[in-house]
Image 1 (cartoon, rainbow, N blue to C red):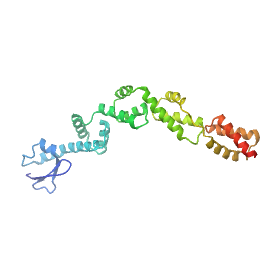
Image 2: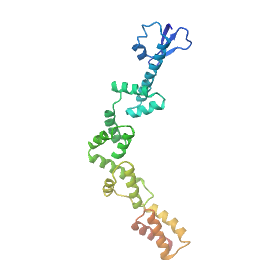
Image 3: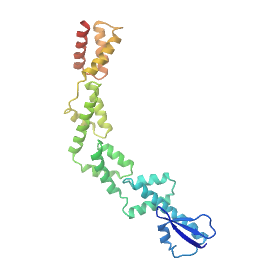
Image 4: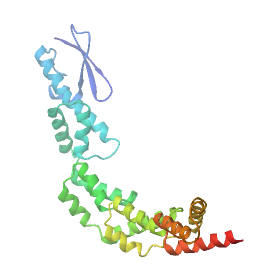
Length: 263
């Protein structure tokens, strides 16, 4: 079939107008240059089929470049994206190899940049960062080696800031409950429990007596319908203790309630 004309399109593509074909042949410029199509005048049906097949590889490659244009990606992340677009294994391998050859993806570089970004922008601890990198297909040993380069004081400072912020935000729980929640938060964010316990000794956990008083007053009204005297006091203390308030906090607030009820 004779090539009648070429028409430049967007995304590095050309339309080839072929004699006897109503639909143009859309090819990436890499395919055109590779097969010297600018110098050829005729194409056989077999050649056209081969060009279409090879063009699909570059379509896969271009999709990967577009995906990379938004932010850095790991090799596995790009592979997963291309698989969702239903490209073949061969086309994906071609695209990934070409990206690596052109230094557009490099998991070793990505690893370092990712950790720097997480340290600067998130509250994540080492374990959470490691798990996220593993999910992105980064080598486990390389992750551990890179994280080991970070001084322990960095993690301590990040966790201490997190604990202080969270403790100040909690306005409804007692000290015991706040402490439990802070430890769980630290673990969820990828820090060791032992580190959280040691740092909690340096964090001043607020005493939420106003919150305790509101809870205690509601419980008092409810329980006083069923109990009285020492039984009422015992039930109140037990219920409030279960909610995470300390015995000292409970005693303070119950004395306040008693005084106000005696007036």
